[in-house]
Length: 187
Image 1: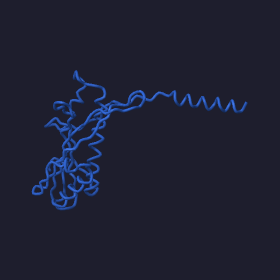
Image 2: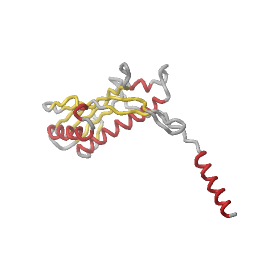
Image 3: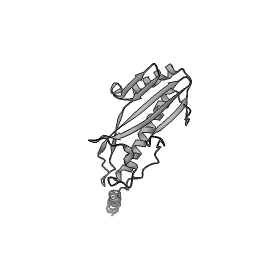
Image 4: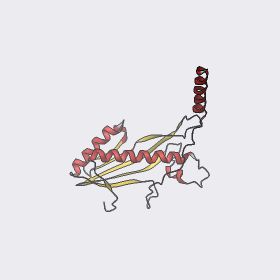
């Protein structure tokens, strides 16, 4: 009798566990930073950091070489004279999980990241996000919920874009010396 009761309780727990439906994924787009002049999604910051422009430039270059898997392909401009670096990396976006929790590839997004160094500070800009398609497809189109081409998954894509941009900028700041970024247009 005890074995039957224990088996019944165990089977009930298994059925309850497998009977649970997975919650629907959050497809809400985060608040995106949009440059008022260019109307592009833009992450930027001026970071006060001790060091000469040359030292900061070398730190940023070393960071890029260790951060990006294929740094030589990603680094588009190395201007040691003007202490400016331009990167053009890619990252994958995933579709929201289906009913079984499986996520499929949503595509590849490219973007540009610029790091400019001056004595005692550097500026980073991450922008020009584009979804790899047969023709140019700026990621700003994902924010237009009134467009006929809008899909609910675009909010999920924007979440991933935001996460990637914040991850890259945080890692750069950490490598450059753990300074805090300040919004400063008087760069």
